[in-house]
Length: 259
Picture 1: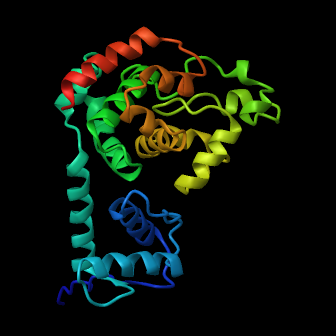
Picture 2: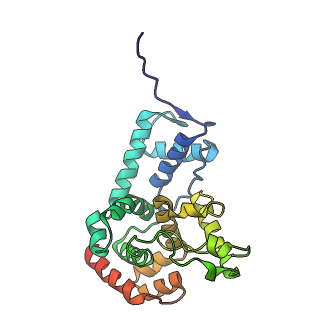
Picture 3: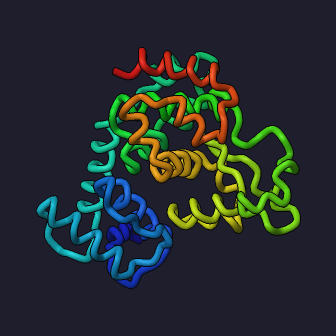
């Protein structure tokens, strides 16, 4: 009896499954910030083919429409290189959030770096303000969801809470405490994750980081960070200035840690 190794899988148009979903994830991470993102649904359709061929052409790779081991390895390395361009270190996060646990920093470091790259949070001014705000909102990574029950949001039509139980179901979750059915729906649609049907997925580290970074960009906070308008950033996130002194403390440390 002889042992034979299965040939490496080649991904092609028409295929489905987790391998395709991983490919879509990598293509999204490798794409320039302004590029429309693929829906990470595991369907190798025309838009995935187009994104793959565009990336292959930019890297002078042959065999358009196919992904073999060499292409996959090159794509993964491209994503790692892009994350390193704007990446923060564990030491920097610890300097900004002295009370954060090492395990929590290790959990969120990679997802945060990838999310910042994806949504254009790639300059020191933007990263300082972004990390400071989410440090406050998450209690230095302690809180994956709001401590309160969410009952206070019941019936809040401005948040899209129009069904009984929506207040508790769509209470604040994630690094920036996304709240309300409407926000869960919007962010889930953009990220390719059905958060409206599965609200607890917002506590997944990758989804949590991406949701925070998308919220940041979509509310025009990169532009405010560029000119140092930290107080206005606070108002847009919080609706007021709750915990402002704590936010400023994180911001001061972030300005010292991120050069």
